[in-house]
Structures are given as structure tokens and as C-alpha cells.
Length: 333
Picture 1 (spheres, rainbow, N blue to C red):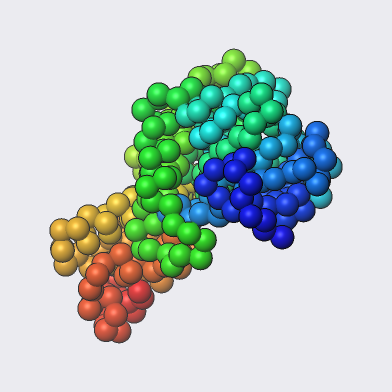
Picture 2 (tube, one colour):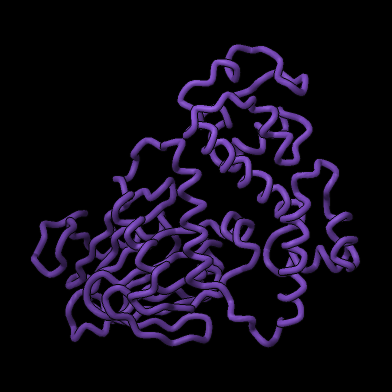
């Protein structure tokens, strides 16, 4: 049960040992405080929503917090966290990396792998801000799979922007979603990519170089409705089987990647349309992004962003009046 603040950890209601563990588990997986008598434990978890993504302010006086191989097997959590240190000091061992954090530093945690966090604050409490990032959406947007265990010191431009975005756009848990959230999530993903993009790692240098070429081919061709994996492989000069392997290694598929480009481009066009108050038909935007069928576009868009393309405009009567759009399909919002 929540307890009254004892003054050890500023800013949030204090939780007992079991309540803290359960809140963390429901939000992002099994993480277990260690090295402290459960009766002496005190912690805080303040759930937040950032552009529709789950986030939380988290802290405790535990000497360490562990996520073991057993925890990974039991909960099957498969996402990333960015963790910003906002009070105290800590350290982490994760994915064969060992790092220390001061206030403002940020790390990337892969919940599919074990991790241990250490309180190095001379016995005092620590506090961090964690942001959950769905693996499939992040990898599909970035075109590569970030490596858990990486960290960056405070002061990087991307780190400052991401932390400011988290702190300034955070709403309490249960806040109603906004149509703008889907666009802001893309900004979050871009900042994470800027922070943790690989430095051309040696074991897969050739594959990464080839993947960048494939990514460029897809970027140039996604607007063609006839463009697909076969066309991407042919233009990149590789076999379809090898093309699919490149994407499988990154936790995605070529089709998903192509649709990611199409939907991200559609989101940008719809945002510009809403900002300028333009009257461009939604069907025209769909076709310009590589979709022949508006129904298919609307279904994909809703699945990706949580709302139909018509919701991106404050008022679009033609998207709601049931008339037939430019390409002969009934309009959907």
C-alpha cells in the first residue's frame, strides 16, 4: 500500500516493497529490488503518458534492482526503455556493458535481456525517468535495432531535446490521447535514433552498409504502389531471400518497412494539410504515399497511429460526408 512520504525520496508518494514491484511489473516487466530489507524499502513510481507512450518517474532506496534471465522468460517483455538519471547516482550492467550515471545521463535498456542497476549514491535514494518504447514500432521507424546497454552523457543535443520533450509533454496516467501524439511519437523515435544509432559495428559492417543501401532504395520507391520487396531487392542488386534476412536480423520485414515509410510520409502530409488548412482530398494523399486503395490506407493508418487519417484535420467535411473520393472509394475517417 502507498505510504506517507518519509522525506527520503522527493516528489512522489512512497510505496512499500511489494506495491513498487507490482507497479513496475505492470508497466514494463519484472524488476526486483535487492540488497535491502523489504521492511526498510521505500520507493516511488509516478506513471506518466508521453505522446501516448508509457513513462514513469521511478526511484527507491534499494542497493540494486535486478532483471534476471528468469524474469525475462517469465514475463516475455520485449521493448526498450530510455532511462534518464534525474536525482542521485547509479550504475548499470546490461548486455555486456557496465556504465555509471550522473544526473542528466541517459541509457537504453532492452527488456529482452537481463540487467542490474546499482545505487551508487552513498546509500541515499536515486530517481530516474523511464520511457517505454515498443520494439517493433521503433525498429520499423529507425531501420535498425538499437543495442541495449548503450548510454550517453548529459549535454548531447538529442538527449536534452528528448528529456525536455518527456518532461514538458508528460501527462498523468489515463489522460485522453491527442491526434498529435502519433506525430510526436515519430519525433521521440528520431531522437532515440540520434542518441543510439550504431557506429558501424565491425561484425556486421557489410550487412549494415547493404541495409543502408536498401533503405535508400525504399525511400526512393515507396510512393510507387507497385513497389514491394521484389522491386527493392532487384534495385539493390541482391536476392529476395537475402533482403528478407537483412530485415529479419533487425526484427522487422521488408513489407513492414515499406509501409512504415508510406505511413510516416502520409502523417507528414496530413499534418501539413491540417496546418495550412488545405483542401487536398485524403484519397490523393493516400495515392501519393503508395496506396491504391483508400480503405486499405485508412485501416493501416488507424492501426499504426490509433486513429483514422480524417482525425488529423480539425474539420474535413469531405472525409465524413460519405461521398466517394477521387479514387472511387468511400471515404473513411
